Length: 155
Image (cartoon, rainbow, N blue to C red; front, side):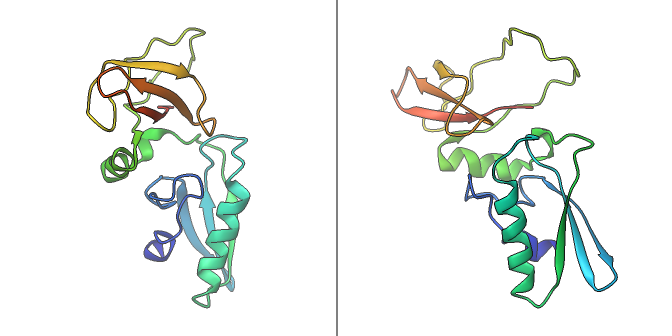
């Protein structure tokens, strides 16, 4: 079943599957249907309805009746992403997240190390915006190769 789900890509980052992103939390049989537990990357992630539609559609194409169950606890963390997923992000031009802070408290002023440029690897980068094309990404530019890039935030 996970192999089938691994073919379902994240609609916002099409190089990652929902399995690689770490949002598939469980798969179980309930009567005649398969229930897929998924955890959103953010509680208000606008892609969750599309992801649920893609998951049930991919399984229906293989004759599997499925239902998606959204699970909010424990909250998703970027630490659930595989190293392969992080490398795919980098090759796609998005700086991958580092290790998430283990503190449950979020400081008002975050001081994180600048992300490495996914194009040249330089850490000499500048934050342009705390939000990129989606809330889970921030926008940066590289002072070495002058490329703009997004960074997948560590949460």
